[in-house]
Length: 620
View 1 (spheres, rainbow, N blue to C red):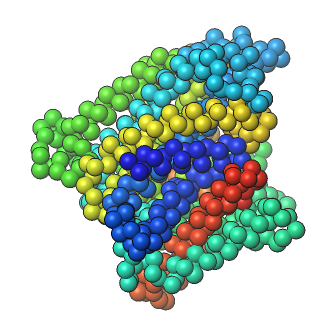
View 2 (spheres, helix red, strand yellow):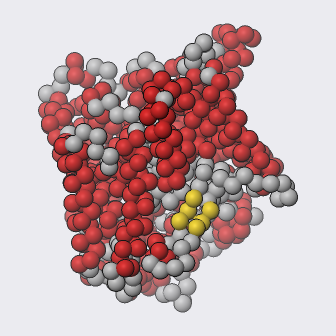
View 3 (cartoon, rainbow, N blue to C red):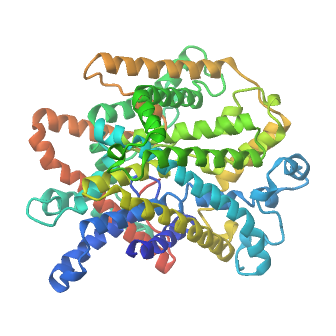
């Protein structure tokens, strides 16, 4: 019950910070506000143990509260609901005689999923208005109801897939799940030997907190100094090195701390493949491809890598998946014991959820075949992202496999205009996938299992948090838009999402696209490289390159250097200090994350309360 009370507060905090001020709290896999709440509750427990022992929250209660808050951050967030609410009125508001959208685009868009009364959208874009008039509420109610059904369906599908995969990845393979380390440490018993009593943790906490405080004060008092941990761009002015583009260097304390938790081969692969993409551009320039558009086709390489990586995961787990399918038709109480739900419920729940997904996009205008491709691709991407989080824990920006990008690989005349319209409207939930719900649910199961909770106790809190976050998040988002104005004060208004979706649709319907052999070669080459890396890792123990590094490496713009620093430090510690010194150093890096998150969260609270800009410690 306490978790249900905190979820609306958390949703309000995140939506106001990210939508009104564009201070991002959910950009990274370990969300800021759930960690802050958990840390605050742990501190409150210390006080209550002396003042009111009966009110002390147990470890199980702390874990469930944290899980509910984390799940709420996957929905009411910059990369999800804010994208949706920013996209829904975009076509109607920006249509003009100059772009001809009313005749070129409108007939091919699913009208039941968007809003169309331009007069009622005036307050949305300009502000100083109110959501609470019958006409405005009526305009938004039906499309948001349909989207709410779709979002809840996604969450349910992810839950079923996590139940199916949990045992293979958690109990049998024993993946590392770096993201759960800090919540686990915070919920330990506050006794001698616990992480919270480690001096190393508080040293790391003090280092990160000091940086946040100094940089936070700089935001309000520009004459004060600033500690440079944000991005610094280094430019190569001389060819062929200039072909690599700008090189970003960051030193975020939280990013170094999280990357330190990652296995050495994975962290090495992440920063290696980021630079690998840069090197390809340089070599391509030297080989005469400098004028070839989009060379070395990084987006297409990512498409091939993710498809191959997902196929490899399914192949290596084929016997396990065949066994789970058998249990769906022939249940075994012994096999189901200890799982969040029975395999029969998970299997048929996945089938029904996938059918709803399929019918939704068929009704939105996609042909049955392309709706099926979109659904299967989304499920595959979800599994891949969850696996990446289970092993790397790092930021994952995955957008290459969405319908609008896949459609561009073919001649656009093979797609009906309604297919293209539905692909554009779907862009909001495909974009980047940084706050994806599936890995957060899997991490919830891992955290609960390590804390001694019955996994079946998590199903209701997860579903309730999802449902509550959808409703509260939509309400708060619209309330802010009409009060502050999307184009007036809402700095987090997702102009990029609407621009990307509808400009792409306009180009697709007018100029079109054609298949290019170079792009398909890049897809095939990337898939082959994933196959080669997987084979080498299976054949040679200790092979240093991991396939998932190739999948996410090119997207680690802000984090590749923290991954490099963490990898180098961890390598030196293990080589010269051994496991004993590693375990002694680990709390320091957890402290970096905790200090950065705690004071970053406090600064956003101050900014929201006094309506002033806050220090952006996660980005820029």
